[in-house]
Length: 597
Image 1 (cartoon, one colour):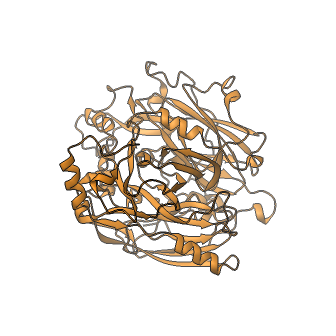
Image 2 (image 1 turned 135 degrees about the horizontal axis):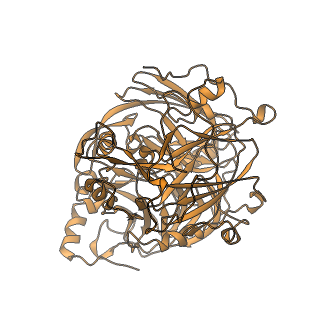
Image 3 (image 1 turned 120 degrees about the vertical axis):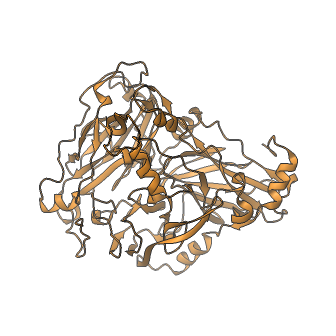
């Protein structure tokens, strides 16, 4: 239990008296309307325009690319089995694509929204109709731009309710969406370009956000307001938490309130009571909160977790090393859990959460290891193929256009020592129509070299200089894959939240150091591992997942830290057709965008 922080009381009073509250609307009304009118699966239509609009965040008012003039963007509400049709028109002065993150896109690979993988991006004044059905899944997922760093502002929630509108836990009285994000005072696309030109250093975000607002610790809440969740004593609330940030993993806590985790990445887990949750970019959590404290103002905070440990400061330019060492926003985002019978922002009844230190790894392991699926009978008993991928950073010769003097090597990222090269046309189109020269199908199941991956004192290895290529792994339909993702010591250690498109996977376990094929499997959870679509590869360690390739098409697999995607930490799987129409990739829609200029 924690009261006011150890800061001057008069400072707290001043901050509280100058904050304006921005009430977060409950989703319960939408949920109840859907339930009252539900008569079976239906088609839900949306018309979106991607455009530039004026946005005020963190004391700056700037133009940003958004959807329908909104930041965060509009929320999609659906029921499992519904078809969702979204007509997206691009009026922005940059290319755009929209990815439906966590939607498994069963037999709708063409609508996954990944530029140069499943589609060509929408140029200015072009449109595309995304058309897919949310089959055999429910819960909290989201959508975001999947090109450049537009995800910073082109983002929103996608909530899928069960057809029965019942849950394996008591039905909450109300529910709120908690969208975590990051904000740059400058154009995030320019941040990406600048980082590439400097040889690898990216400007850290200027603020963390909760529902588009940084909160009172950033001294702008008197003008912009602070996200406020208004609650009633004795009521239970479902928080649909989404980490839509680009580069920051976070701890999340609410002062004096227990979080009961009931779902992770849209899949039910055994309920688990915790004080602090941990969530990486590309992950979602559903947590229950009961308003069981004395009426007052209780702060919610989202605080950065930093996993970085630099192992070699001699290879990279000093500006890059400095950037890597200051890689996370240092000030938490905040929101308010406000009881309706308490005077708003009364300093004597205001409480703050106690969150772990930003580099404390133990709470992340404890939280992730506490998650267990509610449906252990769905876990495949055996794998039929094994893969071992190393993931980390490396170097390539500096771009001739770099702005860093005397630059010889620039930071890149890799999987199995291969840095992804963006093709100039759609891989899915090339695969479907048999067009050559776009990609290769020789992505290796294991790395070329084995060594002490997590020993910071290991000598230089061939993996410090990566290979370039657009290389994919071909998987036979129905194959069950055991995949180990092994972190590496090249240049630095850092977590890597990996996201698989078109499928979810069972997280069998994780460990520190090097994965040992002789001893590590005995410690894995084959009984009730959580079923997720984004998983952390821990710093100085490994994670093991199991997934079934039962959705034909071309599916992207990548680190969900945008800086690492920019550096090339990505690859793709081609899942071949199976037998019959239910296991065969359908033809493309009539209207496909073109990659030609």
